[in-house]
Image (cartoon, rainbow, N blue to C red; front, top):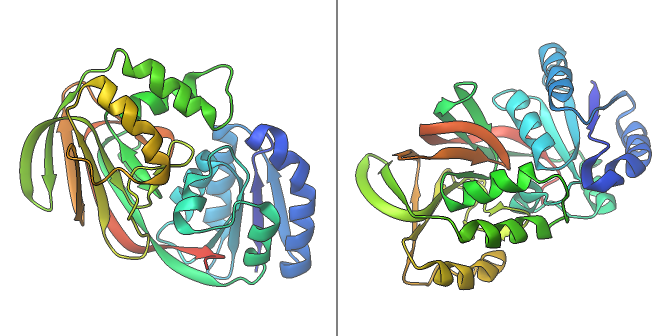
Length: 297
């Protein structure tokens, strides 16, 4: 039985690097055989996870210490396998951890992890125009205004923690125009103009915004939030309510649930779990019990 601790030392402004020795000691005490890998580079992390996945078996566990980008990598290497995944939330947003109910404090998360209690949870499987032809998503697939804000936030050279997303949301809104979508929801086709269509396995994105506030990772369904075309000032007034998830009653907001959503349209690209995954057209399908997650309530 082997445990691999993958640490992004840059996560949380260096917070992960400071806490990693203590986390490794707790894992060593609980599970004995622990390999620790430090990397802040996407490709190095991807390579390390590929090596671990190739040699692991059902008794092994992967512990990811970082933000949503590192969690996204971990999910994509262990989904559909018996390997157990544990998450030590250490990034700026930690949206997947929030979506599944993991504690935000590292100490509290470790208390859960060392119990080794495992829960199978759903993931979204995305195919179509994605870069690799296929990827697993823990939280939300974005294609409209939300995707524009996410990509611009990632491109910022100077960031301000969780405030970065809100700052970019304000600046991007001034030049954003509604997108023309062609979607299919469990086989029911529609064409519409909208500010955004978010497809969620989990409910959070953008460092704490609850864009799909009623999403559950154990219900075998995707939650879809459509914000229809509205004046920019109306969407601006709505933004603060996204953090509390108290916006679905608004007349320009539509929520749906489905097992499959196909998304296409004009001038769109896709973001998922905070990462660029490709372009439309794409298909999002829920896969129940796709990953064995350690430490849920």
